[in-house]
Length: 296
Image (tube, rainbow, N blue to C red; front, side, top):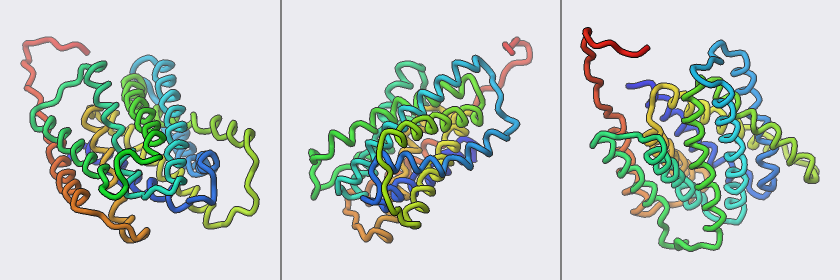
């Protein structure tokens, strides 16, 4: 199995857990407070990255850092909007798959701006993964035009643009350095939010644990995603595949939150599993003739 696929699947698991942790916190913290205090969970990942010996650059170091910082800032804003949607009382089984539509934005930007191409099997895999995400989204009981839909569109757009910026960052700097700058953007945002709002009184230890795990799962998932990009993975493949994290969230929600899935979600899970295999089928590189000079 290719390295980029392993890293992408790890990101999928981490994000699946992260998506449900936000739901478990509920009204104990406001969306901005969840984003602020979850930064505590990012600190161990930041510390480990700061000690890494792979903080290297293969291109323009400053440009790569700016791309990663911009991605981190947009993701912070998208997270706040996502936590707000969950606080509006919407079911996690609806919100998580809906916001997982963000790869649509990344794929569109990657194909148009980066001129990325996919083989036919991978094109089928992208289509199946997006179809699976759509089936996760459509809920007969909630309706497509729910009151919280407009708010849910905010993280879709912001996360989608962030995905492209993350790919651009790894074109210039290593995955470790890109992740370091990406997560570093969360610190000034947390400080700003901390100074601009009143702290809640008497936060329960359970809430502190959940919000810390929220940040750690998110940070480690993003490290895995950027490592996948740095392993020569295609943004138009990795983004929709990582966007299938509802495959983790939905089964856990059934057990922990006692939510149920309909036939649409079940069919979506089947399509998603097929798409994982299709996306992993890369076209073998053609052998290079020894008589043909190649650029270094």
